[in-house]
Amino acid sequence: MNKKDREKCIQILETISDDMRSDAEAFDGLPFTGRTVGGYFGNQGAAISEIAHIVKGMLRKESDS
Image (cartoon, rainbow, N blue to C red):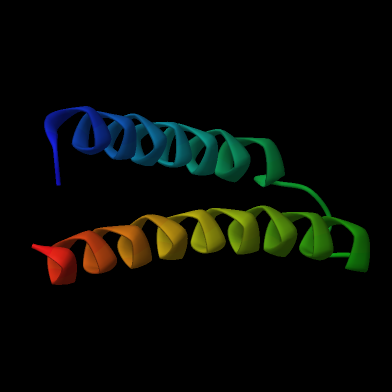
């Protein structure tokens, strides 16, 4: 993986980390309802999807080397 791609992945992962921290704070103390749980799970799903996309790209580039 070249330096530019590596830096892009690091930036995305840092953004995901910051977003997850903010989400945890935003949802803290809210009532346990379908709306809040669904929102929280939706945010987590999006983060997991992006991390999977990054890992998949890294593995593909590694196998091309």
